[in-house]
Structures are given as structure tokens and as C-alpha cells.
Length: 363
Image 1: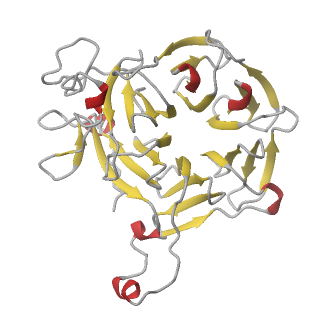
Image 2 (image 1 turned 60 degrees about the vertical axis):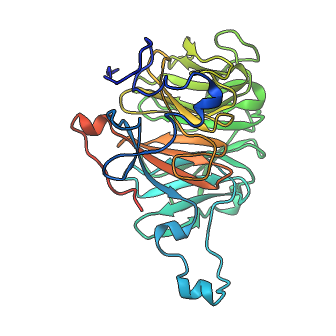
């Protein structure tokens, strides 16, 4: 699964994708190789030229204006008071299989906002009154188009049909305290929920039946200190951002701890406020860090390969990144919370090895 990458100028073992070791302190990390660099084509890519690009910036989405359907110049000049739908305090993100619909949880709007790239609209996902959202955190879709949303205040996992009808509302019997992260393993019939307040992982069947839970507060393998976001690899292993322990823990499908990586600090590969996590098609692990205002990319063994981002408002920069998601075409979605937007990138590894290069996510 893991590929080796040639690079220029990176001299220390364990670091790949070039340019990563040009800076020698984390204070410089925010403005070194992580800064967006333009290729000859004018695209923003990482790492910087002349090294081979591995990640390309595609788009950013804040409001319906980014879909080309906001009020025109004349309307703005005349003071048209029509409110343009826009994100306010986003956290979680997912996307449809074709990349044409992007779903974003917004805790201030108390809704899941849907960017429809074909219809060029941004609108809230309409739900029935039975499971009204108060603090939606994470969102996922299954292959049938059903929407799964954790609500940290209501302490529920709500499952909706594509039309917004409540199918299930889980968590009361299991006494969920503060559910946040969410992962779906449809192949093995599992729903995983990070119960941050109880320092545990709760496991359901795809039918909503409670199966078991594991974890308690602590720092040993299999213990947690405020687990947050979740992701799965192709083998069904669960990756848990163990935020208070500044690490990522990996578990087998049966809940057995396999390994972990990460440490607290301000150097490469360290973590301070880790949040979102996702894996690309080659098994690289992406972890967003709200303190560093970037996301770091690790290999399957937990070695740092590349970081992307620094504090700022420009494309490729972040202000408290939160949730992440990578779709089957290796499009990387990152919630940029304070900037009230989602940024979308393309991992280029699968493209260069013969995969498709989807162009549906673009300005």
C-alpha cells in the first residue's frame, strides 16, 4: 500500500515528499514549505516546485456565492437585502460519492448545510421535527444516501433518510454523554461513535443495534482522553484521534489496540489540538491540528511526510481546521472553522498512478 517518494533536498531519514525539513522549528513551520506554492500552471500545489506535487488545491466553499449563483454586482450596488446562504460555524464534513454534494455540519446554524454543485445551491438539509438538531458535529453518508449526524448537546446519533425523515435516534439507552466523531464500516456492518465525554468508542450495527463499547479515561493503549474524530482504513481498522493524549490510536475491527503514533510538542509530527482525521486511497493518514492551523500527512507507520497550511485566510491556509473527509476519488475536504469555509484538495498519487482526475469540484 505504502509508496516511497523521491524528493530533493530532504536529508534526514523518515521524512519524505521534500521541502519538509527546510525549517528547523515549529514557529517556522507555519510559513515554510506548508505555504501554498504555484506550479507553472498557476495551480496551488504541495510540496513546492520543482519537487513533484502530491497535493493540489481545488476549491473553497463558504456560501452560495462560491457556486456562482449569488447576487450580481448590480444587486449588491443597489443594496439588495436578500440573504445569501453561508456557513457560520462549521465543524464536520462529508460528500456524496460523485463529489457533487458536500455536507457540512454547522453548530451555529444548528443544521447540516448542503452544497449542491450541480444545482449551484447551498441549503440546509431539511429534517423532521422528531430529531431536530441542536449541536451537529460529525456527518456521514451510507451507500443508500442515508445521513448520519452526531448531536453533542442532545447526546444522540441521528440517522435520516435522503428526504430527512428520522429513521433512528441512538444513544439514550447507551447513555451517550457527548458524541462527536463518527465512522461507518458498511462492509463489516459497523457504526462507530466517539463518545468524547465518556472517553470511549461506542459500536452499533448498521441496523442501529447496540453491540458494545470500549475504552476508559487514561493514557495506556486502549484508553482515551477525550477521543474526537474517527476514520477507517481499507481493512476496517479504526483510527481514533485521542486528543487529550495527543495521539492517534488504531484498533482492529474487534476493538483490539494495534498501535498508535503522535506526541505532544511543537515539532514535526507532534500534535497539540488534533481534530479531523482521514485516510487516502494509499493509506496515508491526514490529521488536522487546530493549534498549528494545518493538517499533517503521515505514512502507515506514523512517520510525518508533509504538512499543509498555516494561519491565514488565503487558499491553503487555515484558522482552526476541524473535521476532514477524503472521498473515493482522493478529494480531501477540510473544514476551516473560523474562516467559515470548506477547502477541497486533490491528492495526486492515485492520479499519477493511473486513477481518474475528477474535475467536478472546482470554481
